Image 1 (cartoon, helix red, strand yellow):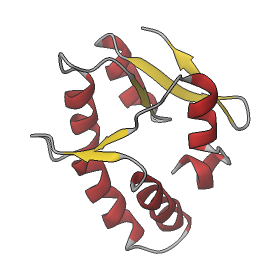
Image 2 (tube, rainbow, N blue to C red):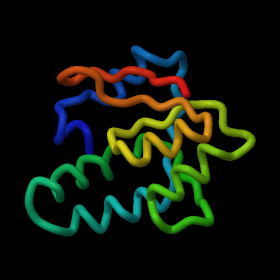
Image 3 (cartoon, rainbow, N blue to C red):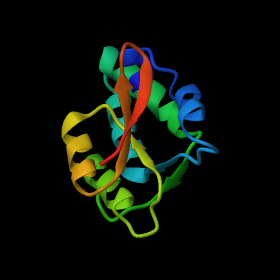
Image 4 (tube, rainbow, N blue to C red):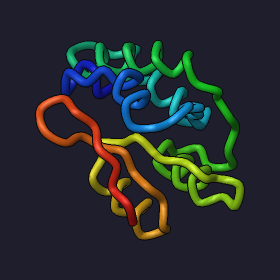
Length: 116
């Protein structure tokens, strides 16, 4: 939802920050975006854009149904060796506490990596 809410070109920024990004998103995130996109207003527009961008990612199932919990489950897994892109402060704090690197908004429309 960052492109609409913050004017961030997410995939361009990922290419700038990370060599050979391989974007993955939990299916629970896609489901939440679809629900939000069915509404009205700016949030629905942002969710619709987010849902469209998720098509550029490999969607993977998780046991968690709540989007934030699904992200944490995926990122805290033994085989995870990447970054999580989020602008959600509570989610960011949960991830950093578990040793997960986070990519988030820095400045007006630039992303940066935060190490745990």
